[in-house]
Image (tube, rainbow, N blue to C red; front, top):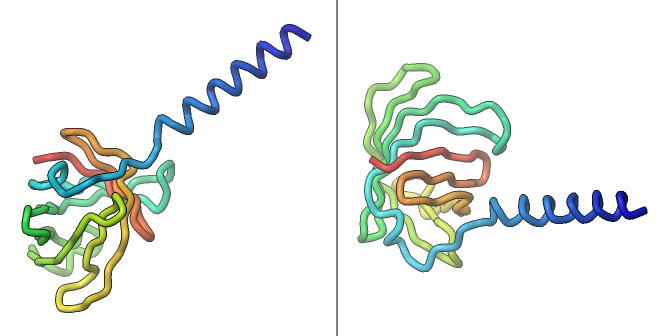
Length: 131
């Protein structure tokens, strides 16, 4: 009986720690993300296979961002640079999906340190390193 209680206590402690270790990060403003971020991978789920990406997302303090990159999957397009709007709302990133359109996607900050960021967006997780 004591052994069972000890095992249950250990499992409960592990469950609590693992659920809080990856808690969503909420931002008050854009100060922690301003700068250039290299998007090196994307995946449909956190623990699924990551696909290589090679783009730069530059978040500017005026709530605009520039996305620079090329199509690494088909290679049909050369280097592109797109300017989009973004904001921080309710602790999440709200970013314009295409220039000239007022359609936005909301992304959660799954992980954010001084040098790394993982965004959970509508269809993909984006994995980034600070430039």
